[in-house]
Image (cartoon, rainbow, N blue to C red; front, side):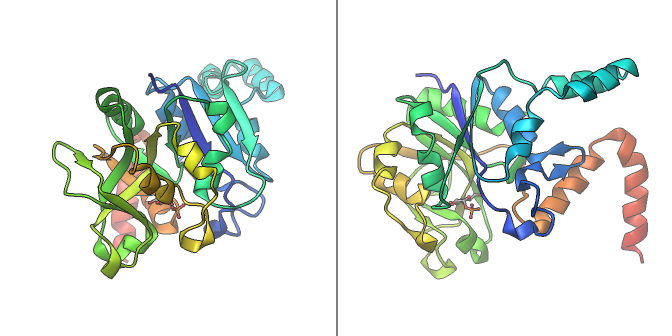
Length: 289
Ligand code: G1P
């Protein structure tokens, strides 16, 4: 069955970015001139996903507004013949009914957030994208994974080798190093300390999951940090199905951290020819100070 739906868990409080995220969703933080959530949604849409499901929470209305018409602004841009900008803001507005919003009413963890989408996803494989992980690549990362899913017909998580010291920030695979970008998963652990980590293969925020995950999440078992973890649910699913890790092609920016977020901004800004010409000499200059 084709992967048509993508779930975007966007209910988190974004405490790492306070005070910026006090009155603004962290997914609306911008890399150059686009919010993080837009990069992730564009990645999904350009990978063939046709239904976008947001699992939101309190004070996340800006996300809904971002993907909707803004008549006054459109009229103003039209009156001023700002056609390129008009196209830019309008291509985001989906056909009615293709973007769906549901709420996670309690902050019980990523697994719980995904479970909140169960009735909308139904009985079919689906993608999950965490907007914090911004991936720059020629071919969209989730599209690379959908290609693998179409061959393997099994759940796939996106992976990257991380510094051993960093394992406590990630879900970690018990698996051999990937061959041709793929590795079969023997086990998964959420945020292990380095001495307990079965490898340095970390889960990056892209998943293709089969719907059987929902009946495991339904049990609401808690794991690391007292939360309902998707990593634990996948470990459980291993008893019934094969799971694979896929080493994506591209560069990931961890926009869940301040430093990763700044790196993303610098990198994406340097990709813009108009900005690069002024930014590069500036960076060189301040590095010498
Ligand atoms: C979540 C997952 C973790 C994964 C990470 C990727 O953690 O629980 O397994 O490695 O996303 O970004 P979080 O970053 O929300 O703490």
